[in-house]
Image 1 (cartoon, rainbow, N blue to C red):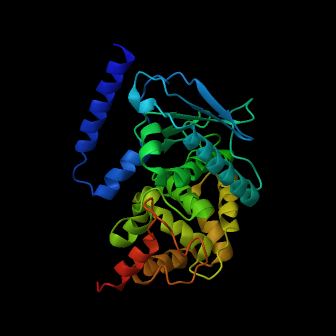
Image 2: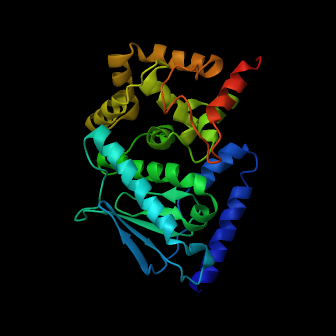
Amino acid sequence: MNILKHRKLVLFMLMLSLTACGGMSPAHQAVINERSSTVDIDMPVFENRLETDHFVLKWTGKSSHSGDNIYDSAIIKDTADYLETAWGKYTSLFGRQPYMAPGRDKIDVVFRDIDCYGLADPPDGPIQFNSQAWVKKPGIRQPTSAHELFHKMQYAYGYKTKWNPKKPFLWFTEGTAAWSEVFVWGKVSRACKVDEIFRDTRLDLYEAEDMAMPFWIFFVAGNHEHANDSLMVRLFEKCEQLGDIRHALDQVINENYGRADAFFSSFSSARKNGFFADRCRLPYKCILGPDGKDVVDKVKCLQKKPS
């Protein structure tokens, strides 16, 4: 079977599997679209290359599969700038570099047709971005760049390279990567990462995946005026030491906020009654969706409605 036919067959099967999830809310289906592993197909040949201080970006405009192609090199240049901005903010906060494959001194970044906005798995592989989403949805480029690079920061602390968490863990791995979108840009690639956990208060935190992001804002800010982003550093250091997310999180909460169960209770209360109360400084006070609209305003409107 040639590569193009293989692509079509696999994509058709993927569509069938996603259709079978029709019982989920649109937001939950979007999570599948955002973070599902890429279709197992061969990489296209990348005839174009842009090298920066920390990245090598590769793309094509000649693939026989049209979904791979990007023709505007300015899109690539902008993405390189976004990645370098995120790199600078991460290394400044965490004091270490994102994970790189052994023997490499730069991270490969490729653009092709994949079944999600971005992918940074496995640890030794390249960061991958969805070419057509990149062309058609410019609002996702900044937050998705930060999100996928943050997975490389997670790997730098041993996640998947030295230890594996117990399930469920996507509320941590995807949730903190979603937090990084806001930390770097004050934006998210999908509005449901901000508002769904308030819209559906029955949504379990540990099942919320990237929609658990508001918990991580609460973790660094505690609904106080000044966030302490260094708590995220402390958390990852503890995860590296213990290889256990829940144990590490409980320890950091106990050290900084008091009893962990009381902290979780306060988050639950804030989630229902007034999480964004004009108290946290930027970027957590105003979070933009991919359409450029402030999602925090939507959350405030939700919380003003009678229960």
